[in-house]
Image (cartoon, rainbow, N blue to C red):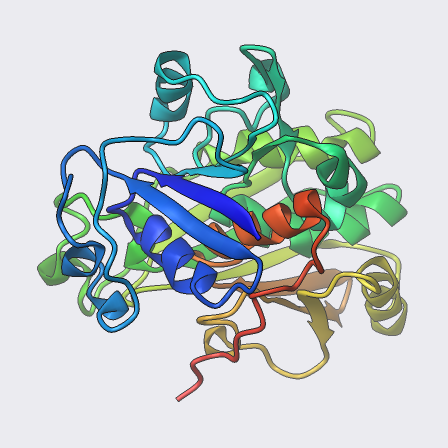
Length: 325
């Protein structure tokens, strides 16, 4: 049994961590840190935990916890680690973008490994510090990694991906209110989204830099959770060859699956799964991928990384069925 602490306990991702970890047979959640909610019951904020969690938020931490999940806003994880010292044996899993890029991976004698298990499983197993990937970055990389790794002469990738409102977090803004989101769809950060940097840094190592462009247009969707990405490029492979290539790449990945049926978002909501559909239409390759942004795109993948780092079965505590109906 390992002792776990969660830093920044009031957000959507922290709530999903607590919901998942209560069913994990090898984890004891020792504390959930939140200055703004200190001594309030956790289930007064995360009301889906009523009947499960009677714990209270705390402003105190245990520096000797086995695993710490940092669920803080971007830029705040580095600040927190500067102000709070943990045992050098304590494993840190950060869910912000503070340590995802190579230039930021070494911080205060801690070296962070980029935590995409389908790409860096062996490095994650040996690591004590993980930079959990972004949600869009997870959906997109899993969709294109096999093609980039095993194909030469690729053309530009064109990506359209839509996310639910939980991707924007709990803080209210003009684009997160119900009156804006309901019956609406909008583009934001076209070609400049922050997840592009981590995507390019990981996938371009398999090819000559500048060989092709990765063009990404994100959308805000009229639903709460999930990401659906559609990506197209060109390839000389036929569809059967492409499907075989993807199936081989993900042969040992417990949460990434290839389907030849039509893909829809409901197949992954409330799961740690990524489902990918690959089609060849004329000269074009169309790749659709779907994940739950709060699970495979955040809390679920963080627990997957914890399992690998701790020597547990990779899927332990994460075998959820999709909320299909």
